[in-house]
Image (cartoon, rainbow, N blue to C red; front, side):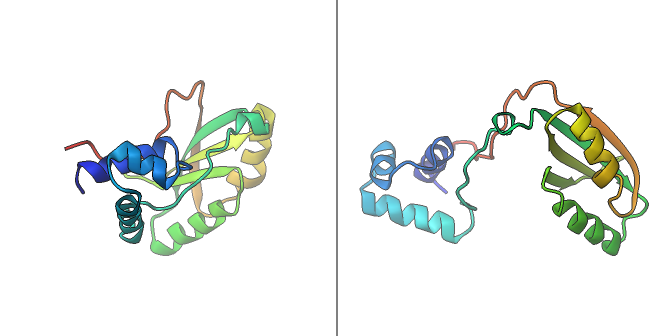
Length: 152
């Protein structure tokens, strides 16, 4: 990756809907050269996809909760069962297997505190192999970005 690739990635993260012509102008390439670079970044997996960032609060889910979960054990079977079950809960936005006291951190969206209580009682506590859960309510999102490699 060179400076131009980095600039392409930065521009796409700021606006994934930018046209190839606009992107080419922004990075100082011809449209065909820019398209080749973007295609190569996609082919090698650096660009993993293009997504619409939805505003959960405007969709009625004003509460964001980070839930730390400790399992009863860490066998491959336990981890796989937990992960498959968590993936079936639509309000679970992200699942991270972590090192440390807990095994997982989940990012969960809820309409309000009562909705999270129902989600906790009906779904999260029913996840397989859960030993302990600790929930932290997000007061304010300061920033949330995707990784962009530092410029060289």
